[in-house]
Image (cartoon, rainbow, N blue to C red; front, side, top):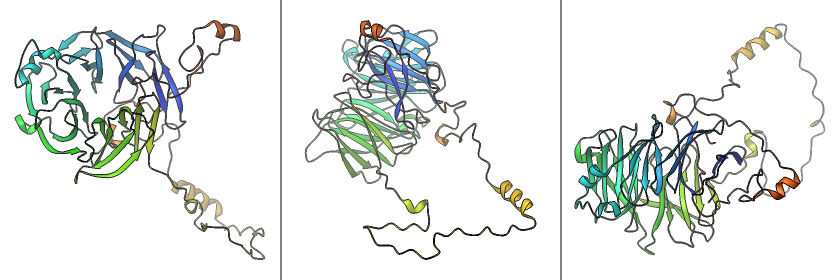
Length: 414
């Protein structure tokens, strides 16, 4: 991989920005995390590097090299800090300003039902911040779900999944009230989450989803939009691209989405739109949304849609020019009153942000366009080739060389 971060714009359906330093990173990007206002983007590289980007200017604000084989990172909602999950071993808190690293070894090993200091580093842990960022949720490959204090690392609550299956990933709902656990026993489990509740009441299991017919493994899961009424589950088979939309109250499948014969590597949903994005094993990115049907009668109330062509006989005076209606004596005053009664539209600042991010200040509404410089023909032939094109040109969208590129959605759809 080339270690580049790609920002995709849903409005223009094109690449909005390329985030890459002067020296390309040899390690691929394995995960990204947005800030609450959408102005910063954290790129996590498999080689241990963490890069914090300013999305509007394309400048790199912070760079930290942890020296750990990173698997994922979650950005703190309000501080310059992140929690990282490694490919093997304990998670860690990383201060992006000073570069200080704090391993969560003691608290996690204490929460494990059978702690073993020699074997514990070989287990796999995944971590994310609780709502507000005051606490951290940590899940282990031994089926233990723990809630830790961010500052001291003390254990607050813990939950052991039934049968002690390995927990591979943790997804927090948009409202912060539920967790989705993709487990190693071919099940996806939903847990009610109350980070401020005392003791064992912080985690309450709700239900699980399994394929009892074909016994398929699951690759990823995510909630739909900001609520928790539905969640999407992706199959883990290497030659299937199938998504299941599950209703949480009845735990039943409402729809099955069939894709190409490619495995699913990553799955993410838009925070405010009915949109799900999947990354296939071949590096292609697929957008899943509801099918839109054109309704022309909404533009013209007297428009009638026909199933097939029909002969229409026009009236004699149908297309005649209508005479101008007489203007009332007080027409000027009526026009002023009608204009004042219209709703005021702010064309400079745009609409207010979604209520899911009401506490985020100075949110990013758009990304300024930065034209790409084109090299002359002689220099372009001598320059080293990049993925999808020569240096100075934009590669084709979807060419991610099979790894998880940094293609996710901001709160504002950029």
